[in-house]
Image (cartoon, rainbow, N blue to C red; front, top):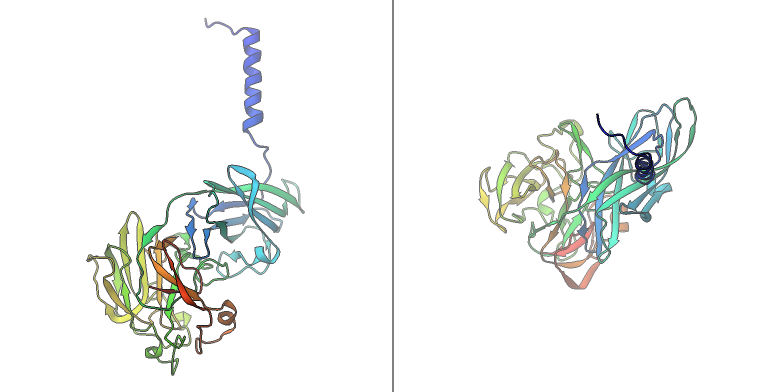
Length: 395
């Protein structure tokens, strides 16, 4: 027969269990709006603005019959939740909220059984310590517990995400002066940044860090003469380069150039032609490089080829879902151009030559005219930085 514990020993055990429970268990709360990070981790990258950028998405679902209103989302240091790294509310919150079917949400109200995506781009000083984990605090109106039919204030933490890794260092995908990073990272209103696609049973932001590279000529023009002619664009026909040693895993080279000025009829776009003629390289370590919108018969490599950094892969064109010649370039964590998550990277060396005016770009209806007002008289050397939206760089 086992020995019975002494009363003092039993009391000590009960007190110890109570202390553990009181210190390790957070108070449970009903959370009718459930939130999770789309990816389990995110990677910081140093931009040309001297800041560390952490870019990721949250998936927000209202599981309650009562519509919920998101008032504020705060990003917290996971190791010190009292430290708020960023907060989004009002117009700033709304411009980051996306419908699951694509496109911006019209309000911060989330109906029953409805999902929204929330875009986060956290910017920290270059010398700031990077948290190893982030948490998110929600301030909202939502349905209460069982039996509550009206929305009530709610506040709770959710959606942890780990911050880890170092961006891949690559060479330039092009050569020459005055290349403009069009549709670049990281503003939530960007074409690439805001595009999440349902592919192969998941939601993927393959274009999270994608750039549409276009070139200015000596007069600061993207295009000269008739803008409906692809040959009049400064970048058309430029050599596209391997950014690192790698293996070609996919190519396409049979599509005709689109007429510039308008996007093709959406009814003609399929998952097979959306990116036009292209090349996908396996750079090793689970990293893939994607080059899109190349010329017909302008792809110079084949599946299975081993390429070296700086090798010419093909010619820049205007094929696929595009309205003007450019090179769409991105890194991703899988060999699918759409069904993979976009990865940050840094270019080992380039010259920062200025920026195209955001106001001019937003106001323009065409690419005609002169765009070089933001050129610097003395471009600055940069190493291991990520070009941001509308930067002008010399490779």
